[in-house]
Image (cartoon, rainbow, N blue to C red):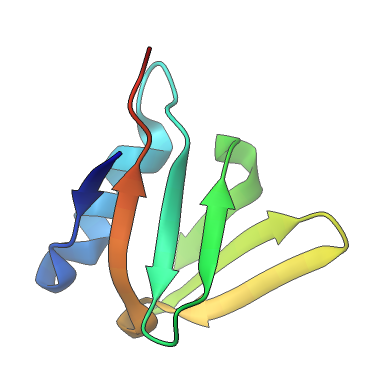
Length: 76
C-alpha cells in the first residue's frame, strides 16, 4: 500500500486517486483514526471542503481538513 499524505494538496491527491485509469482502490484515513475504503470510483464524491464515501448502510460525510492520509492499494 502506498501512502499519499500531501495534506496541503489533498484535493489533487483525491482527484488523482478517484480518476485513475484503471481505478485502484484507496483508503482515506481521518485524524480521529477512522478509515474509509473506496473500492469503486462511483462511491466517492467531493465538493468544496467536504467528502462523501458511500458505504453499505449509508453515506459518510467529512471535511477534507480531517484527512491525514490517503493510502493507495498496490496493483497486482
